[in-house]
Image 1 (cartoon, rainbow, N blue to C red):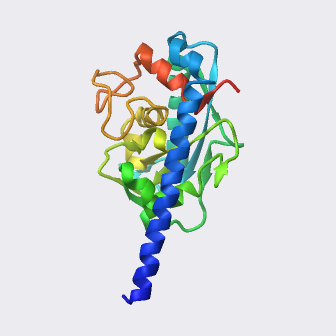
Image 2 (image 1 turned 90 degrees about the vertical axis):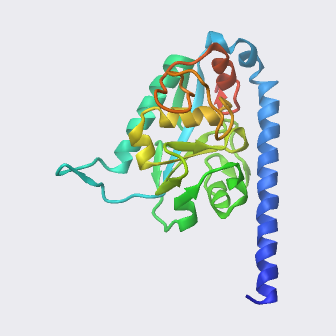
Image 3 (image 1 turned 135 degrees about the vertical axis):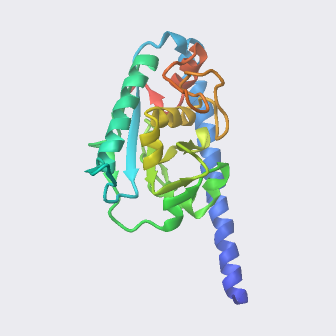
Length: 246
């Protein structure tokens, strides 16, 4: 590699990191401001789970393959697997938080038809992903953003990838990102995967490796994770920027 190529590569990394820092700071500031303004009532009294609130969701399927054949029968297409996970999420959030999960656009699911780079399909998920090529790619697709926020509903975006490395089920970078990453095996293994990861994004047990330690809780770190939530978890989720009255 020549000197000029090395300089361009280094400059690209610096620029990518600078943009990631801006994204993280902007989200952190918005999250704090929301919780002490629009979300203040729920931050204090959210355990009442009233009145009803709304969360917008948009799912990008980045990897769509021929369904595997299991015992002679083809498995359902990935779109159906994702839709089933969305229905579970809608039910849990309605029953436990009095939050309606709604599509950000006309439908919940969008299949990306253009070629997706391998670094965005086979992902090692951690807090540093925002500073990688994958993080930059995801940032370019985020629902509700066009370089800057274009909506006050702050939707959560889900990326369905080919392989999520190092995580059995799914991954979220908590409040520093507006997206969740899952693969087919993760959402097929547990019906709790999608609502669990969205919970991280809304500030429940913030970040990879942070979980509730009560078996049966929605945010429990492993099986037997369930659908139970604690009173303060209602406060945290309902006061998130992703959960609004409009």
